[in-house]
Amino acid sequence: MKIIKVKNPAEGARKAFDIYQSALSSGVKVLGLATGSTPIALYKELTDSVLDFSNVTSINLDEYLGLDGNNEQSYRYFMNQHLFNKKPFKKSYVPDGMSEDHKAAAKQYDKIISEHPIDLQLLGIGLNGHIGFNEPGTAFDSTTHIVDLTQSTIDANARFFDNSADVPTQAISMGIASVMSAKEILLMAYGAGKADAIAAMVNGPVTEKVPASILQNHKNVTIIIDEAAATKL
Ligand code: F6R
Image (cartoon, rainbow, N blue to C red):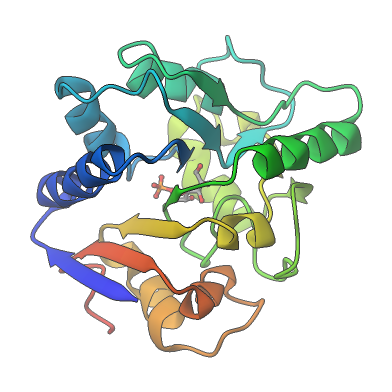
């Protein structure tokens, strides 16, 4: 793992921007994207830039079950607001949280991923070490699947909702095997709250108890972290 330490999220976003700029100039065609607080500054850098994504396909990690794309808390809405409305992509995929048959929707998403191998996958990390919505205990060979969110994740994401009771308890997420199939992975994490998860990911045993620890087995991973997130390394 290549670790880049930065002073703050703004510097992290600029470093990440450089990675996207060179990826695009080297002809990258498929970007795996993430939501959450962490990538917002990067998306701002991208939308403020002259980079052209009109030949790029994006594949997002996850979506809440039961929220459609017009719902302001949905990840489709988030992506439209922070990126796609300002930077049109050739095609953008986000898992379908409103399907009548979630298993079929998961299978369909795996087909999309296999038809569009991911060149560069962006990740955040949960306080419990999740990547995507792959919570502790998720099998390393998992593909797209339906997830029961842990209380830790529900609590962490409650800040985006009026009431914590409004946070969906289930999601559809790209699996760990799909994340690992990306040619290159960029994970960003900021703040002291992420320090334990970062230490377990980088130095802990590779275990399904810490989903992000599998990244130790990937050949091309870059991690951008601030000083607070790096304190336990
Ligand atoms: C988001 C996702 C999650 C987040 C993680 C960190 O699509 O899959 O794994 O990356 O929960 O979230 P933030 O950035 O809000 O701390």
